[in-house]
Length: 99
Image (tube, rainbow, N blue to C red; front, side):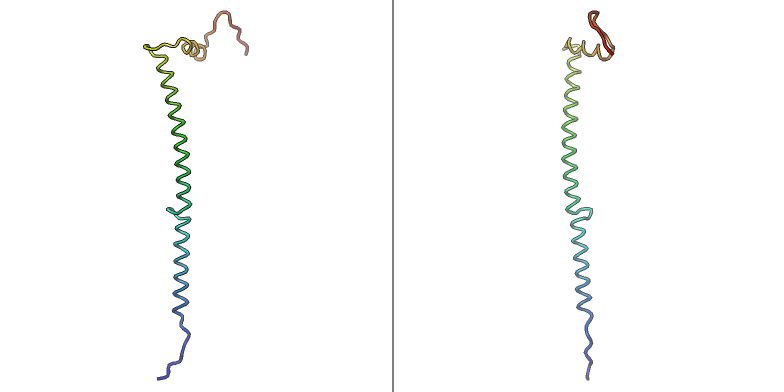
């Protein structure tokens, strides 16, 4: 039995398929939904949201302080005067308004 030798296509096809799958999984690991770049984006967004949360907490603390200073238990006359001037437009009789 004399078999003629034919070049085998199994090896190149296997390596091409293995290379394609490796390239796909490498791309998915870097750029996919759960990849490295997405992780960096999420961490940057998380730090931005932490800064925004700190700013909002500072604004809340300031508003709570102003509210406490205008309460019945603690009345700050300077703050009351400032609020009356800005909200109601009150002026003292010796003041001059320039617009």
